[in-house]
Length: 176
Image 1 (spheres, rainbow, N blue to C red):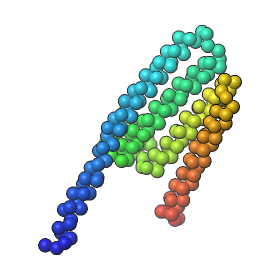
Image 2 (image 1 turned 45 degrees about the vertical axis):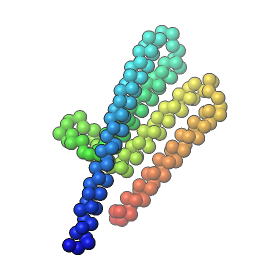
Image 3 (image 1 turned 60 degrees about the horizontal axis):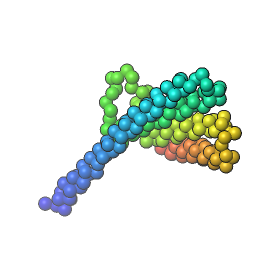
Image 4 (image 1 turned 90 degrees about the horizontal axis):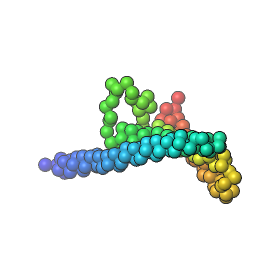
C-alpha cells in the first residue's frame, strides 16, 4: 500500500469535518431571525407610540418618529440580507427557486455581492441617523454631530474602496 493511498482517507475525513463545520453557523442565523422578531416588535411599539401621541407631536417630532421607524426597517432589512445571503453563501442552498416571492438578488448572491449590499445598507442606516441628528441639531452636542459625520464619511470611503477593489479583482479575472 502506498503512502498516498494511506493518507487519502485521513485527508478526506479532515475535509469532511472542515466542510461540515459550516453548520456551526446555523444557530447564529437562527439567532438573527429572533433578532428580526425583536425589530418587528420595536417597529410596532414605535408605531403605536407615535399614533397615540400624534395630536401632541410637532411636525419635527413626527418626522423624527418616522425616521426612527425607517431606521428599524432598514436594520431589519440588513438582518434579512445577512441571514438569507449568509446562509445561502456559507452554509447551504435555500432551495426556494420555485417560490414566486424569492428575492431577485438571491439568485446571484456570493460573498462579494453580499459585502456590497451590506455596505450600502450600512450607509443608508448611517444616512438616516445623520438626518435625525441634523433635524434635532439643537439638542445634540456639536462634537457628537462631527463624529457622526466623520463615521458616515468613513463608511462612504470604505464602500468606495470595496467597490474599487471588487472592480480591480473583476478586471483581473475577466481581462477583456
